[in-house]
Length: 441
Image (cartoon, rainbow, N blue to C red; front, side, top):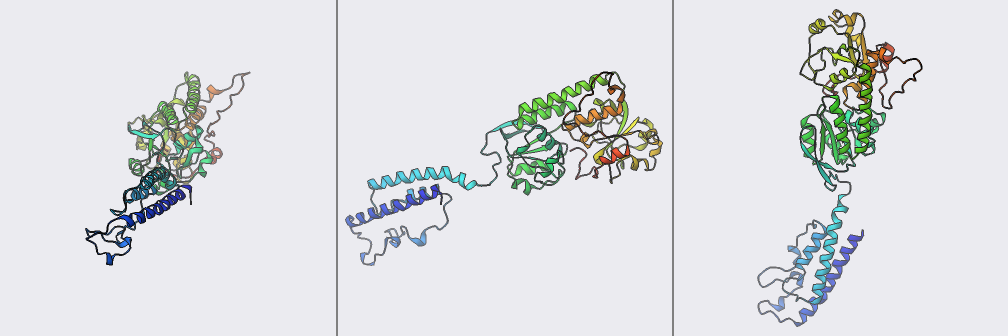
């Protein structure tokens, strides 16, 4: 029994003994009622009042347990005069004061002891309002300590910001960095398991407007859990989103350091590519049906930053295009994301065997490039992919001048890939672009 239980039980016991003594004294001096038959009198526990009601009758006492210790003690305080049979005394007033103090202590201690492992959902933490990717003004903890990520890109960003110790869960597709695979899983990106989310007692759930559905956002909110969603369409918006997420996670300094490094790397790359003409490319999200990227996506912007230009000019994010139109445009290179290769058939060898594709010069001449799957994740690794793609498209501008020292790759650089079959095979990961493995994560 804890201190509060012992204190409350002792208080009640003392008060009952005190009032029992007072009741005996009062019974000796009170006049006999003319309306009640003394010869039929029984114990006070079943004594009927003149109005026909029973004071403290056991059969009329509510047996339900009190809602809390405080409520129980306050109930005793209200009924401590034993109906009309016991007179007020100085002991009675002392008893009322003691009960009142005990009730206050119990009210303060009760919720803390009873909460145990129940979800906090930010209710006990300091909250503030921020605007997320949906344009919503949402209330989130000032210092979130139990975070769940429902998007691989956000999981990567959490690690890049150095706050992964607060990450208590992520999705089945959160595979980078490798440590993220050891976190408790809450299901897929499209259909996460709400019971698993609630069981982890998060005070903040991170989502991506590109990967998660609005139904998922509403479902998590229905549990009373604060949510924050991102929405990015350009490289600049990714940088801004990283900083905003850092602010939400109470890591603003780490956000400034990370985004400053990424911007500097883009500036260096821009200077190197300033004098070269962009290569015309077809980025293949999926070959059957043929799906590519629209001009207003961060993938298309990444291609531009790498010295490439997508031949697909569409205002749709993931347009379906005809092979006839691609044959008319004749790209210089085909570009594949490594995570969409393998058994699914989205790799150069499989595409080259499809009917009609030999009409493309790039297929007949085997002009293709393979980059990391990070190109479809709006996270810090995307900037390494941009650098890798630029090296593959424009190797001449990266040739080391005589006497110069080779540049070390950035600490979070994605492994380079190429059109070489052996190098490509090392990056193959089965898993098509589908409802359970979205194109953008």
